[in-house]
Image (cartoon, rainbow, N blue to C red):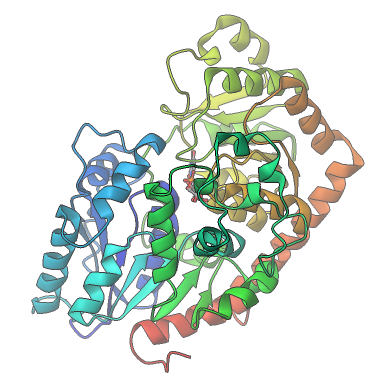
Length: 486
Ligand code: UDX
């Protein structure tokens, strides 16, 4: 064991959309000779072990990439779904709970261990509020990975201001329906003029001043201002204007995205598994895509945490079927609330049998890279949005929650790679119409052209000499203590 390597500890918050960018970052650092300790939760280790993508989450055979496990403080039967986010916030708040004690004793053990390289620094997901606190207490430099877009982060940075302005909490429930959410937010510098209250992170939509998720995320974002460095999965060409605003309050920003692109050379060398999926991957889809014509398939995936009502599922299902275009749709086992599921109905399966493939999980990177994929119907999670941009795939945007509304707005109005669906209710006619528009009209061609331009820019940013590539170099130097933190 080489104990003279730099040693970086990576701590993602235990959700797929956060594990993925952290794992990619860890892989990149590992490829530069950094010893990695990745900290995951007990619950997710069990899930990783049962997903086929990674044979063992402990990555046997990689003695310079180790996995450590902490509890998340929730009972075993907690589903850890979107409906339990507030419970996780309660568990992660403060510094005295079970996860907090566990991370403190883990860091102390790693600091004292003679068998592994001395700890150089920690990269904490910005949402793991207790990790930086413990690191500071133990004198370990801590960097934040904020996994949203910069425009999404700028939205979260307004939470304190919303309180000051009296815009949070909402005066009453009617604000959700009376047009209040369509109010302009020109007071937020740096955002495009089309931005409205409804594009700020959805956690503000409550009348409860003590709403835990709002307050937790306000704190997480405040903390991100006090850090050795802030790492963002975006690139300068894409979000330069917004980054200028964030830089007014946060020094040492490293924009190193798209991480899927920056880590592609490392993936090609197959040093570590491609991904760390919490769901079991289906395996038939690449052959199915191989049999389709170029740019003919609608790819539909609502990420790892969004949920649909049976009614929304039905409208999406018939909208896609009625468009008559081929589609590949990932329906996670926990996507639909309740039992009813149109996908199990024979008449629907009969209707789509020659052109619809339904899966429970895929390796999204592979799908978006496939030449048959024409368009991505997405919930606008930041990873999905940026992965799509990185592969030049235009989007139909149906934002679900959090900062996804802002991602969707920017994708459609600023980067011009998407068409927008109203959030919430879904109409099959609208789905069918948008699919036809993107697949068959001039508008579709324009979106495709723009998406290809952004793909090129993403490639330029991540190849040697590009902004993200250079920023990653600088990050490595500063993480291992050889930079001047500038
Ligand atoms: C979201 C977003 O991260 C974030 O914007 C928001 O704040 C809350 O959580 P999620 O639903 O996980 O998370 O979306 P996304 O950011 O798109 O991440 C999903 C990740 O899982 C992507 O990296 C995607 O490639 C991967 N994925 C998803 C698969 O590999 N296969 C699938 O079938 C689905």
